[in-house]
Length: 501
Image (cartoon, rainbow, N blue to C red; front, side, top):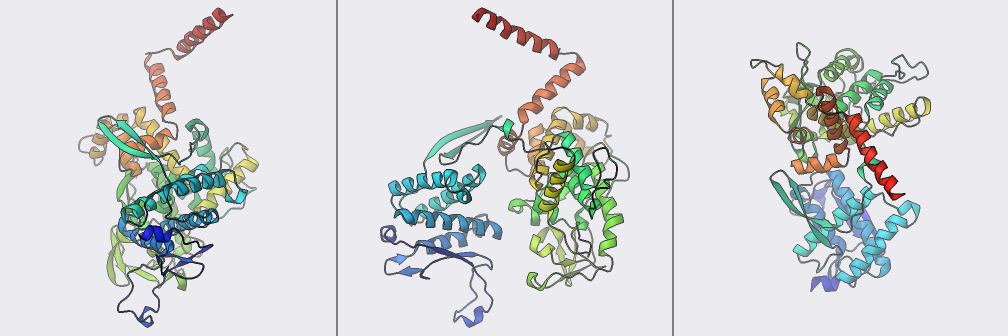
């Protein structure tokens, strides 16, 4: 059988290259290859894809990689990540005389050694728990495919059955026992507390904690940085989602301030899994974004000669812009259909990039991880040594926690009651007053199930939010004396201690 022949082939190194169809006409093939440009390809160190024994394991991996786009994984960056995971695993196990499609016992032994190597091995080889779990997920997906396709007889993983419940929703799922246990949520806080959130926004704007101008900091593009930082905190967008937003995709500013949030449509072209959704943004955050768009951004883009670099592809010249689309190189295109790489090449009618955030020369700006990291470092060095490092995804976590707090405490429900039936926000008001908080947050974050939202929040601090909301409601309405309850509980433990003596 194929897998038994493969099991005796050992290759010391596996090279990773990326496919390009450039010049395919000279390859002596009948038609253009179906492999998309940028697809990773693994090649054994002897440059062979098969031999007398049959297909090489690397060739089988390449087949799996080529099926990723049709299996729901359309991002080239994910293809590369998956390929690197398989290459690392293949190169590790060969030192133990084990191959990719060996028998179950050697594979399980190799997995144990690999887990130790990634947890306690050389510093440069160690993985954090999230990285390890991601590797396990990729390897598990590959082996399930390989077994189903007849390339492998066994996989190295063992699974347990688990059941999750939320209301009347029940879901059975398998738990891979190779994943590591994660620290409890209370020691892995991933969001910004309110005081740190305010401190971060002031730092992005070049201000000190008391709101005065920070004369000791010579930052540039402060209005841009503060506007995008507030946008991320107010919408829960992922880094890719807010980085590649186009100016026409920013909602118009309502004619008057609103206590209710404003719907914010997230284009499918930049979302995870290309799933369209609608989140929201506060009126105050939208005002700041429009101030940047109307006052500061035009100084960089008006008449800008910027063009995308040649290696990125030809410029995409935009005309006849409206909120839903425009003409790109003379052809009508909807903004939602454009992917990040295409958005980077858009040139506005009056010059400069079409992205919301631009550099001083009018070109697109995308280095938000660096901006947030430097702001975090500056806060720690000069104002508060306890301040955490803020990566772009921490803004999304903060949005989730802050929104859940307001939903649980009834802020949005109270605001909804103030909206008249004839108001333009009537539908949103009805939704907020009737929907379960977790259902609302599921829709805003773009999760496929409320079970996902519940698990996500559990890793943040959901218990604290419900406890605090209960305590505040009790104090406000005189339903409970929290201090008295705490004293009573203390007395119970005091009595227990005295009896023990």
